[in-house]
Length: 339
Image 1 (cartoon, helix red, strand yellow):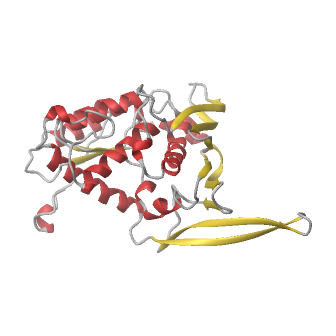
Image 2 (image 1 turned 180 degrees about the vertical axis):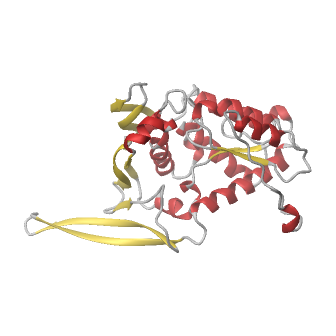
Image 3 (image 1 turned 90 degrees about the horizontal axis):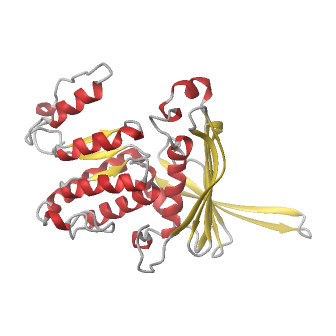
């Protein structure tokens, strides 16, 4: 919403929509509002297979969109959504919260020359989850645990190995001999339900320079969200055990762990350094703040640019010279390569 106006004046009576077409009713109500109303953005937490339809509807109705992950059934589909966003001078962003918190930004650069990232993200869904949850439905989220949990693992790998340089993410259709950050991806082992939706998988993503992300995602194992970064440039391994669903508290942390051997290499020693980062703004707040900042600047700067110039390439979906627009483009670029 807008920042102007008295708080009391911005309070409105909530409207409840019900029935199988409840979301259609809600979106139709939002989309028909004039530009003088408080609503200028929507959050779409629908199943993946409905994203294309409702994102298009929101963007063409003049609304910025925060989209739940996984954003699309394919990177091609998300590219098309981003192109529509750029042509309508609106901002489209995925709802990956941890990337916006300062802890993540410090963690991914904590090991010099990283070449291995290992991520285990699992939880035990139980019988009701397997029976009713949309993440187990082919017509809802057909990528199952890989789309839901694996999304975070891939995003973390991209952040670590690109060292925040989105320019290293050469497009898949690039044929100018440019160096690609991601060279191959492989599902090593997997299990699926009767609809063919994966609920347990081990995966590898190969990056340039002989760097590898390995991850296990599962709906049948106990809760575990541990990520480790190691490399040839440090004796330490960086470890975080709550990257996606963080613990409560005024600070968050990750560990730098160094192991050694003594007594004729028969006894292990360990040094642990705990790195604490301020959590006065939790990751949800960080995400919404960035979404608001980037959407505001995208609309201001791209609306004055030629429509044909927006979305010309994947390194600049939105035209503009501000830091905010540059960050918005980088975020979109990471999303495309995570999808």
